[in-house]
Length: 335
Image (tube, rainbow, N blue to C red; front, side, top):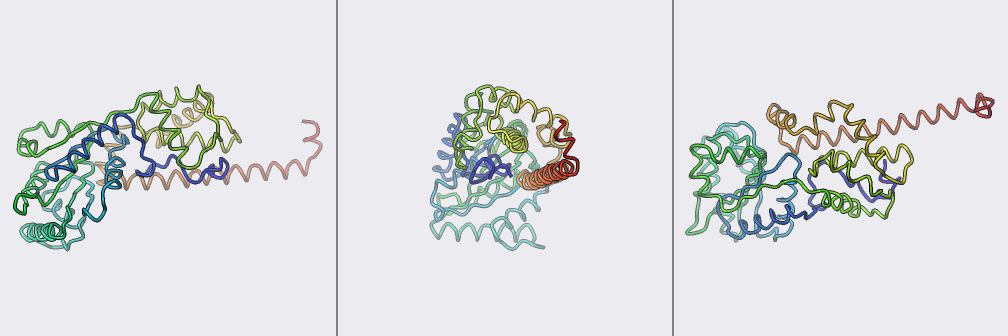
């Protein structure tokens, strides 16, 4: 694909959250400070909200890269509209515990025993709940009850709740007062500004060995920012297609005209446009019950398959053109 054409060591704009590409925008730096503070406290809930694709999951993954992996045990749960008992089963499964056909009382006992064993090893148990806006009130209550597990003065479980903007309103609802009292750090991760968007693109390109090929013209960043609104995942989607377009068109310079052409293509593709639309993504996640990260993996595979198909069609077209010119050289000479 375009990686070899531009002599890159990897794909710079993949959709899956990858902490090795972490970019410290002003918002991400501030959010990281809140996460580190919360982690240092070692108890309660840490809440990070933001639009789909704002970088919440990447942020937490980067946090875990910065701490000693031998000092904690982390489990991730992608929230769906489950009842309290099913939520407990998912948490048990995330920590690798037996959970099939277990009663709620048995599940709670197993979880407490496991968390105590982790504590005795001198380690901490961390639970990351993604898509937290999908938590039912009963599921939230179960999470709060788990935060009651203690060994002396030490809390046995700390939870990170990552959700879309509406989760902030959920937390203000009736019956959430006890949970709100357990939140020790909270931050809303907003989009990047125009300058950060440019720096983000160049950072990801440099991460895969970019040395000015392709060249990004000064005029190309404005339409990228206007189309993506500074949301990292939208930037990734657009820039990945821009590089593919550059490869197919044999271009070593990306300008505003190139970006506009790709935006035109994207606007003509309803499935891709829907994938970029925040509201439609939320509906898709809720209806399918699949987590955001799983959906991204599927989307990434589909995009890669589409790219390979486009390249194969282009190669076939060139071969057919060459054959036609060989059969009718007079047309080539007269053209």
